[in-house]
Length: 275
Image (cartoon, rainbow, N blue to C red; front, side, top):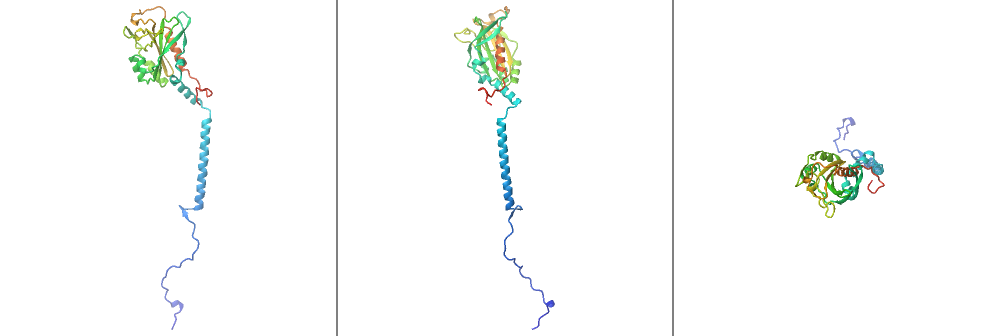
């Protein structure tokens, strides 16, 4: 048998690739990152969450315990005034006695006879005024009746509450300013008279209305209507009368308006304020 020299031997037929010897596999990667790198990212995110939470808690605590700004105090004072018709006692809105000056220059006191429990806007005034109040968002009308020292003059005062001073001002400017007097309705359109049986105002019906006035303070319009305690119809009274028999009425309305609309800065030490 003869053997070919190595250079003359034919190439060996192709075979399966040589397999690697078994050994440990390479590190597992997810989205190009190894497990250790993902763990570091998770730790970093957790720390960031803790820092954010602590920062938010510190910020919230600081916000709750800081002193209010001047703008916040002003808004709180305005809101407190607008809510007084609900939060104040009726006797605080309508004091038992109110002073006024007579046309002789003396000071007198008007005494409160009673306070009307109903507060609806439509029934407290004549229809012409009710339409104006309703259009501007009237919330309530509070009424009380006063009398002079000799109980010859009776005055009903009405506090009309609105949501803000702008609505009150619009309503005040739109109240009809040309009242008429007749035997059936007295002076109208005006605040409705509030009579109280068994008092000096027992006969004070709408037909006895002889005078009216109006003023505004903050979110409130204050109306008055006045007449004589004997209930005589306004149409039966001569137009020209000496002096100012009903001069106390606008003074009472003005005092109630000023007191009710006077702003008070919040006092956190007072029970009236919640800070």
